[in-house]
Length: 121
Image 1 (tube, rainbow, N blue to C red):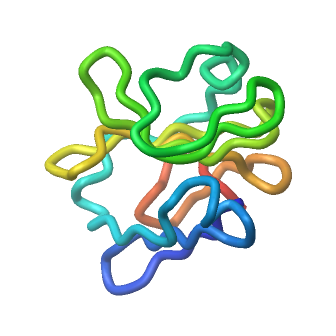
Image 2: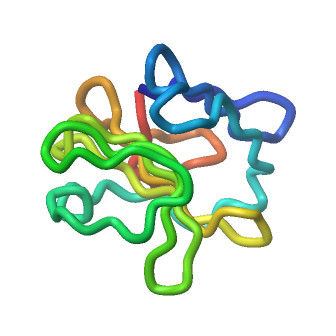
């Protein structure tokens, strides 16, 4: 699971619990200017092939966590429930995308740096 917050012009993601072990990553700090797009996309997580694992964990239908290379992109995954998947596309960062799952429903956020984007509650 990933907890998200916004502070000092950055999106801060903290990988929680055992996911730190499975993903081999504990946190990210992404400047808001480096976020190209945020979208809900459950179909991306329903497949069994998420790319070449480097390093990470992939048990289809159970968990995808860690760094994967797919279609020439470096992608960080932390997904247990594919139906709540959110894709954060990045520019000028080490990772091209962060693919994470929300804990609950997705909501429309207004009056924030993510206005008109679907974001995590």
